Image 1: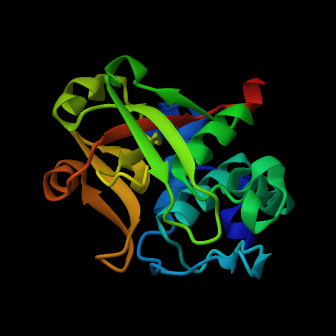
Image 2 (image 1 turned 180 degrees about the vertical axis):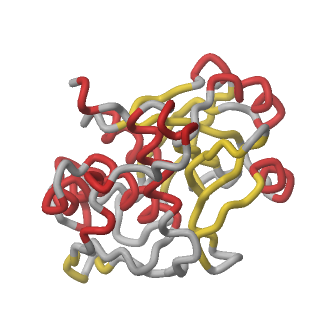
Length: 233
C-alpha cells in the first residue's frame, strides 16, 4: 500500500473548513476524495461456500462496500501497517478471514462494527419505519432474518440537520430477501449533500448529488452511521 494514503499525511492545508471539522470527519472527507475516478469492480472479493476466502486489501478499485471499508480502514490506521488489520475487523466477524464470517449483509455489517466500536448509528429518532427481511440471496449461506429501523425517504430532508460530513449512508432494499442494496459516504458541498460512492452504473467512484440519487432510486428507507473518533477512547 502506498504511503500516500497513510492517515499521518493529514488533510489539505488550504481548506480551512476541513481544519475546523471533527478529526475523523475531516479524514473521511480527505481520504475518500483521493479515490474519485477509481474503477468500479463487480467481483472484488474472492470466496464462496466452496472456494476459500482470499483476503483482498487492494486499493485499485472497489464496489460500494469495499470502498467504504477501505476508506474507513485508512482513516482508522495509526500507521500504514495497521490498514490491513483494521480492514479485516471491518469486513469479518471478529476479524477472522473466513467466507462464512464475512459481513455479507449490511445489517450484519452495521451490527458488528457498532459492537467493535468503529461506528455508531445516528439519526435514529427519524428512523420510524420498521422493516423485516428474510435474507437468502447468497448461495451457501443459511437463511437468516433481519429486523431494522430506517428513515423513510419522505422524512429524510428533516433528518439532514443531524448529518455530518463523512457519515455513512445505507439504502434499504424494497426486496423481501435483501436488507440493503447500496451504500456510500455523505459529503457536504456548500449548501448541498453529495453521495460519494463506488457506482456500478457510472463505472467508478464518483460524487453524485444526493437529491438526484434519491429521486432516481426506489428504496424502503435509509440508515445512517458515523465513524467513531477512536483517539478519544
